[in-house]
Image (cartoon, rainbow, N blue to C red; front, top):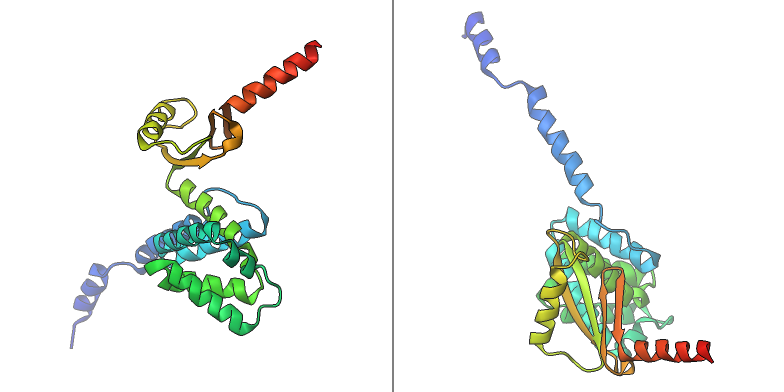
Length: 226
């Protein structure tokens, strides 16, 4: 049997419980803060995109969710028929199950992630599959912000080659439009209506260097003069 002195020595050497609990509470508080999206997105699709981000962070599946939503966004932008089906108000439970299976399949390996599958099921149960294209777009905005990315959208009358896009990216990255430590996410959109030149969108800023814009300004000048 241990002596009283030995028992006192063991108790003195043992770590205090109060000191062990404090870091746990701090970590939990930090984790709760990290689930908040870095930017606010609005609308019903924004609400669902925010909910998915929070769920993905909590389940440590943000990267698979980002890959899955990116793949689905690309799919829906190219498949008008599928997009139309998603908005059908008379889908049966069987229809919804089949659609979800197809979406999971087209999302690639990331589509098998439980958070992604549960999210798609929730959309189906709430009859909100029709807003999936918007959810993909808003979720992409949140992911870009979380990665410190600034979206650079270059609209041209014809598709630009990689060399031209690279030169534009380099020039813009050195400008005051891009904050320190930010990364550019470059997208080239084609719109023949601008005739020539470029329309450059950096975040919420737009620089219109298109021929159509110059013609419009010239027409206005002529009209005002006459």
